[in-house]
Image 1 (cartoon, one colour):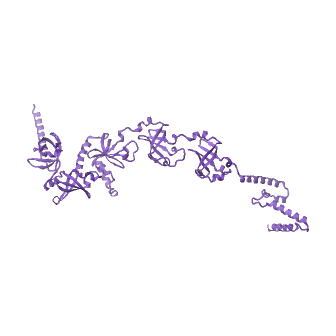
Image 2 (cartoon, one colour):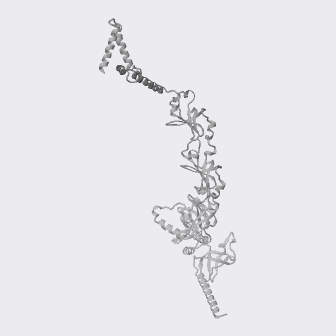
Length: 570
């Protein structure tokens, strides 16, 4: 062996001894209240001996490590214990301070922040009354658990571990906290958990609570992750309680971990807006409870994306039964397969009537039959039709409503240009006003109220534009247009007058019939100008023929005088 190798071995041996010495010195510097990991080396009838790394073995009362009289540990087990007493001769350890004891023991537990065992005896204003070492203590509700206490009565009578946060008036004023112990345990479990997991892992957990925006799942003691409502299922979920319940065991995929530095930065940024939000959002406390990491989870990504195989499962023309998920101003979204929803536009909801709002014919949660019109897997869109399931009623119109056939329908509505009359579901025709005003039954149609029955005839048919023109039947269809006949007569009379006028060379005669309507009777029944002239001639001839012999002489003279005065007045 060379001298160089010898020096290297001696140097290594010295380094090992120095490290071992430092470890012993560190282990020997145990303090009351310190939490240590100790290995069981021996068990006697009343004592458990443990190794703490110091020169002196630690002692633990065996009764502390028993449950129902049976020991819960064995040689070689590693225990988490608290140092309760240190001396050159011995080190006493305990899982928790319990039983009856003096004020000195309570003071040691308070100064060393040792866990003490207490029994919850009553619920009082602002918290719980707890009995520790035969003394009454108080634990505020905010310090009882890391989560809000929803059911305080459930803790009454239970024995739990606490730490003393205030000890005054010789033990007459004792305030406890259980939350600080739980947070310390969670911190240890969180560090161990985060050290062994990575993004993409599939984990198991239990649903702890539900909020409007998602579900909190406990992955390990003190480690919670949140599953956003959008990550609960491939199907649309509006409330987490639709698919989950508190206590459910679930498998989740780890999407991301927001470490402490990012979370602290976010909290610092949000602190500027603290005056705008005095109260934290309900439910946010649980997500921040990890204090160092925000864990995002997904349940739906455990399963396959249903849209990847939609082209194989859905085809245009398929008829399916779906569930109405939501209604919008332009249609209804209907789930036809788990995670696959399609849109039925307003125009595809009904043949029977014009639908202005989807809730006129559908309700959320209703199951309906639909026909697939189009599938676009790339854009994740499916077009559906509710009305096509029953078939297009207009396809049977030529057979069911041939031209000139008569049918009984109901008045659907009145419009400015006519009456819309429904003949069958989805089949409505129009009776125009131009037809109604020219038939004998126009007064009947004017009094017709929506919903009343009326018999009509099919006059015209336009299948391409889905239009039917209707007409009246029977006596109601007789055409009566007296005003139109009168106007026709006036036209003919006017033309005759103009012909007569052109044939008369005498100016006086032309003056007497200068306009075509002078020889025409007035509408009020009084004589026209030509008739007035005839009466004048008749009066004059009667007066001349009678002479002075009486009879019409007086009447003729009087009439002639009256006609003369009328002429002078003009």
